[in-house]
Length: 106
Image (spheres, rainbow, N blue to C red):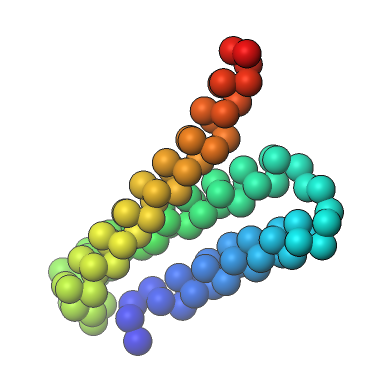
C-alpha cells in the first residue's frame, strides 16, 4: 500500500462524486449555474495541489525512514499531479476567466 493512498482515494472520490452529479443534472436537462462548474474545476485544482503537498510530506517521511515507498512512485505521481494541475489551471483560465474578460470588452 502506497503511503497516503487512502487520503488520495477519499479526496478523489469526493471530487468525482460532485463532478458526476453535476454531469447527471446537466444531462437530465437542468440548467445549473456557471458558478457550480467553476467551483468543481477549482476543487479539481485544489485536489491536485493537495496531492502534490502530500507527496512532499511523503518525501520527508521517506528520509526519516517512517514511510516505505519508492522514489519512482513519488517522482512519477508528482509529475502526473503537477501536469494535471497545470492542465486544470489552463482550462480554468481559458474557460472561465478569459471568456468573462472577452464578454466585458464587447
